[in-house]
Every structure is written in structure tokens, then in C-alpha cells.
Image (cartoon, rainbow, N blue to C red; front, side, top):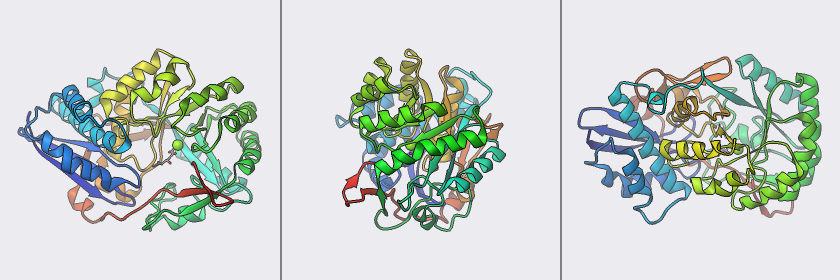
Amino acid sequence: MQIISAEVLVSSPGRNFVTLRLTTDDGLVGLGDATLNGRELAVVAYLTEHVVPLLLGRDAHRIEDTWQYLYRGAYWRRGPVTMAAISAVDTALWDLKARAAGLPLYQLLGGRSRVGCLTYGHASGADLPELFDSVRDHLEQGFRAIRIQTGIPGLGSVYGVASSANAAAGADGVTSRYDHEPARRSAAPVEEAWDTRAYLRHMPGVFEAVRNEFGPELPLLHDAHHRLTPIQAAKLGRSLEPFDLFWLEDVTPAENTAVLRRVREHTTTPLAIGEVFNTIWDYRELFEEQLVDYVRSPVTHAGGITPLRRIFDYASVYQIKSGVHGPTDISPVGLAASLHLGIAIPNFGIQEYMRHSAATDEVFRSGVTFVDGMLVPSEEPGLGVEYDDDVASRYEYAAAYLPVNRLLDGSVHDW
Ligand code: KDG
Ligand code: MG
């Protein structure tokens, strides 16, 4: 099973996606997701210039060796661009191996450990009535766990709130009411204003209102988008304890994970982190000191299925579970890969799920199903996703960025 072609495909059905397609001499095709939101073309160049030439002629069965060759062999390790590129190769090789075996990919990862992967959806609103409508919408769709994000009094557009002016402006003609993370196509990022004190004052009341309206059982999550100092994070975690969150995500910036010791000292609210991590080494201190409860890394940004399986096994030693990143900038290929892994591992926790636009689903025909709040991978051989070149060619790449966050005095802030 020799690789005879490696194509880097870019399409923009509602938002930009980068996909690697490997073809073997026996006519099999494997797909991998290489999408890095707002930096897509950097990964295209990394793959095209430095990886594709190394793949041609290689034995597609040698997944581990190819991973080590691309990671250790490059000397320049880690980083989101490198790891998104390696992820795509690794995922495409697993897709190929499973197609060659005639089995859905999860069978090669140890087989099914559960009937499906429980998901959480994104409810949001500028104010409480809008937020409640959004929660009801998600419950009607079948979600059984919900992330809660709201506008903050005194601030304008807030990232993660679907009705925010910037989100609406970026919707770019994609009209699904569930497309809650628009591409924000523009030559430069939009800028949003942020006030941490206003946020910390506002959030406990929001969760109290949601619990009063929807009861004690519904699992609720919240994402702080890396915006807090350790002591602010500790304060938020403690103030939300009465509302029994499933998790509080990304409370502090990712660069200095040791600060989570301080957060842990002060709160029993469970913590999730890792959507911007790239390797198993990013988790070492967090796991060994049990500073987190859920691992957010997706297949797409952690170097693929091979290293993510290793991360989850390492996490399991410390009773830490998966909670994989699944916004719409993870393509249906990346989502399918996460689900094949999620259905197989012993320590699955929850899977984030934002629905892709109809246009995205036309380009990537995926056999994934959503049943009773759970996502279930396809029973087709491989990942169970096919890429439609004709449809993809209708959607040209256009620059799109995540927003930049500034404090009210104009300073650039984390988010
Ligand atoms: O590309 C980054 C976004 O997908 C990210 O901001 C979304 O924080 C996010 C989440 O939890 O889905
Ligand atoms: Mg997040």
C-alpha cells in the first residue's frame, strides 16, 4: 500500500477547511483534517512544501513510523502549524488502514466501548431571554448537555455569543440558525472589548437563572476563553460551585499551566483545558498533579489519532477524561476521527458538537449520526467521510479570522 499521491485541498463552504487526501497504488483514498482557524494557508504551505514530497512512495501502513519521522525527524517540533499538518497525515493513514481492512476505524482502536459519544451543544444569548430560547432550542434538537455563554452588560459583541454583532456580521450568508461560530471573513480580525470585572460580576447570576429555569440535572458547561488571572479563575470557579457545572473551560492562558495549582486550591468546579495544546508533554504537569478533569485536544491539532490515543491513555492513569474540542472549524473529517477514538477509549467524557453548515455537509459527506444527544461514527470502512471535489470547487478560500480582544483602555487582552 504505497502512497502515490498527496493532495492538499482547500475549500470554504461557509468557512475555510484544509484537507489532506492520500491515494495509494491499490486505489484507496484516505482523508485528514489540517484546518487551523485563521491560519489555514500556513498549514497548506507546510504540507505542500515540506511534507507531501516526503510522503510519496512511503508504505501507508507504517503509521507510527511516519508520525515519528515527521515529528522527531523535522527537529523543529510542536506548534499548531506543524501539528495540524502531522495530524492530517496521521488521520489519513488511519483512514487508509481501516479502509484496507474493510472496517470502521474504531474497530482498529479496540472496538466499541459505548453506544455513542455524549455531546454538548452551544447555547448563547445577548441576555437571559435569548439565552433561554437557545437552551430550549438545543434541548429540542436532542442535546443532553449545554454550554452557556452570554453577553455582558456594558460590553458589545462577545465571542461565543451567536447574536453578537460581530458574529452576525461574519455569518457570511450562511443561514443555519445553529451555525454559531461564523467565519468572520475579512482582511483583518474584528476587535471586541472586554472587562473581566463586569464578567465576574455577571456570570453567577446567569448560572443561577439557568438552574432555576432548567432544573438541577442538566449538565452545564462554560468557556472562559483563557481570559482570567489565576486568582480571578479561582474566584469564578468558587462563585459557580452552587450551580454544579460539568466543567469550566480554559480559565487561564495556556502558556503557564502551573497556575492551575492556585485555581485548584480554591475551587471544586471541574476544569477542562487543551484545545490549543499540541502534544502530550503539554499535559504532563497537569495530569501528574491532577490539576484538570477533562482533556480538550482534538485529533486535528494534537498530531492525529496516534498521539491523542496516547494522551487519553496517560490521562486515564489519573482518572482524567476526554472532552474533545468540536467547533465548526474542526472539519467533518476531524470530527469523525475524534468520534472513532471517543467511542473506543475507556475514559471518554464528552464531545463538543456544533453543527456544520449545510454547505459544509455537502462538501464532506459524513456517515456520522446524531442520536439521543450522542454522536455515532459511521459503520463504513475507514472514517466514513467522502470529499466531493465538484461541490468543494464552488467555495473559494477567503481570509477569515478569530477576533482580537481588547480591554476597555485599548490594551490587547487574552481570550
Ligand atoms: O478556532 C478556535 C475556536 O474554535 C474556539 O475559540 C472555539 O473555544 C472554542 C470552543 O470551545 O469551541
Ligand atoms: Mg473553548
